[in-house]
Length: 96
Image (cartoon, rainbow, N blue to C red):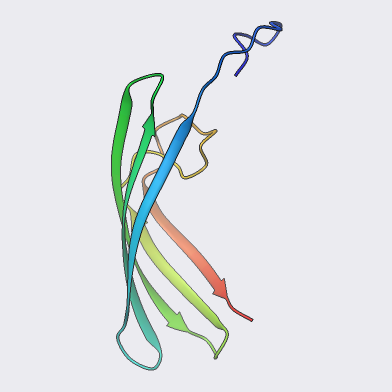
C-alpha cells in the first residue's frame, strides 16, 4: 500500500478473510444458508466478525436465486474499508 496518492513509498499491508458456510437442502426447490466470517488485518491489529443468512429457490437444475441479509459491518471486497456493508442482498447462483 502506498503512503499517499503522490508517494512512491510503499508499505506491506495484509488483509485476510476467512469464512465457514453451511448449506441445508430443505426441499427439492428450497435451500437455506448460514455463514460466519472473520476479517483481520495484522498490521493494524484489527479483527472483525460477521455473519449472513440466505434462502435460495431453485429455478431449474442449474440456477438458484437467493435473498439474504448480511449482519457483517464489512465487505468481502478487501479494498472496501468503509465498514458500512451490512444489509439485504440478492444472489444468483449457477452451476455447470
